[in-house]
Length: 203
Ligand code: AP5
Ligand code: MG
Image (cartoon, rainbow, N blue to C red; front, side, top):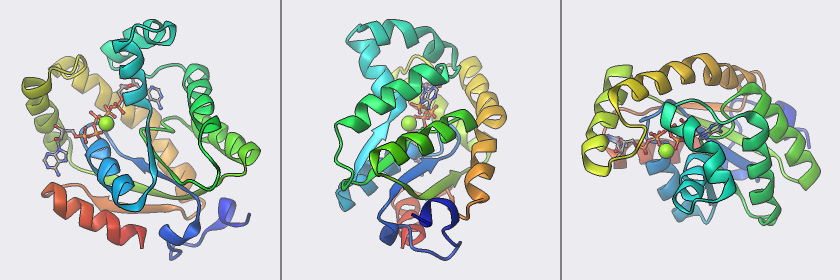
């Protein structure tokens, strides 16, 4: 109960028993790292970007509704995003730990997650922040553009995504820092090196 509001800086994220958030700019490696951390710990990864892309591929109503936002590199409105997350969480037992990847991305989403967690007998145990310089992020995302053809990996949209992150998601970090929940990890280096840093941060 108290962990929700006042986990000290030195607490163990792994032992907190709560859900974890992986946060950081586009290209920081959230998806790459969340996948392996979730796999090795038996956590459930919940990537809002992946869920939206899946709906777009399947041409669902939600997919049609969010497609333009993703293509422009803008955030999907909070109410739509929170409703989708609520539906996902309803299918996950409170005893299973969720690793949120790319959510919450606005302070309004962070507040909504607190509310949802409270209703569902869950809590946030910690926040892992992966950071890297803008040039590195741009290089990675341009590289992926060639390899994977993700619709939002064009130079203009990459720049927009990075700007939107600075404006709307940086404040989310402060929101959790005020509760002593944030562990910062350097995202520059090989994928296994960054995984090792995250593992250590989660200890
Ligand atoms: P989302 O899918 O979350 O995309 P993103 O934040 O732009 O992040 P990326 O997936 O591009 O980067 P990542 O940090 O996951 O890095 P990755 O591991 O892929 O969101 C997409 C869109 O969906 C948003 O713009 C928005 O429209 C919408 N959306 C999603 N969530 C939302 C929300 N909560 N609210 C509102 N709207 C929302 O790695 C990137 C590349 O780098 C890969 O090619 C990878 O192989 C490479 N790489 C990874 N690690 C390393 C390393 N250590 N060294 C070298 N290369 C590396
Ligand atoms: Mg991702």
